[in-house]
Amino acid sequence: MLTYLWIAVFGTLGCIGRYGMTRLIQGLLGNTFPYATLVINVSGAFLMGFLFVATLERLTVNPQLRTGILTGFLGGYTTFSTYAMESLTLAEQGETGRALLYMGLSNGVGILAAFLGAFVARAL
Image 1 (cartoon, rainbow, N blue to C red):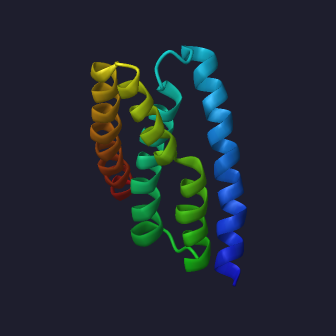
Image 2 (image 1 turned 120 degrees about the horizontal axis):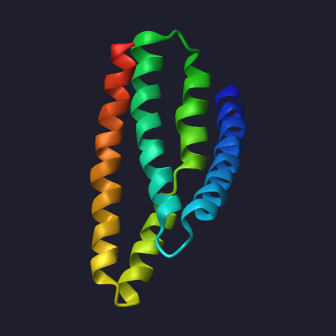
């Protein structure tokens, strides 16, 4: 039961972090392109790679707390459903090139960020 509590607590923090990051990125870069979702997904992928490895190989973390952080926080913070909807919207608006660019960057850079996060965790 404690695992569910950790997921709920960290999920709330992840959602708040996502909202704050969205406001920050849109304030800096505007909303003519889904920059905020891209930044959130890439940084979330980095954090997943980093924290997954760090809390498994480098740090002693309570398994319930680890689940709360990885599932709760990163589940609340990352935005895959928003990414999917923004991709669809760009495509439906005839912005096929921008949709493909967005999908390619999100997937390619996101996966690279996860690898980088794991690498950094192992290098520490």
